[in-house]
Length: 77
Image (tube, rainbow, N blue to C red; front, top):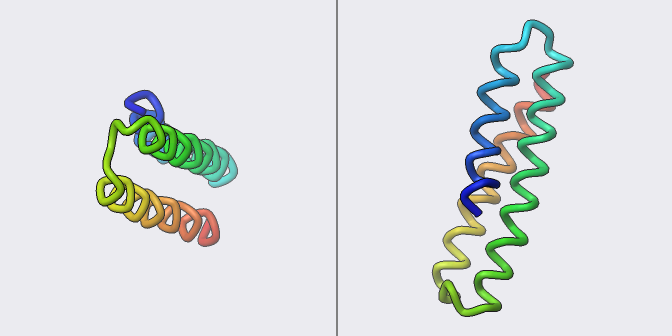
């Protein structure tokens, strides 16, 4: 989960520093893939009883917000 969450931020930052929008967009798509990976990790953590239902709901809500922001940014490029 740590690797996936760091990957989201790192890919956004790396893409932002690229010179072309196409490259930036590609890194945003990679960050979006890391969001999907994070979603699976949250589901598994809940199934294994590492996090409670309320914690899972909060994390998935925040992740959904982040994913929507990434999709909106991709659309604007």
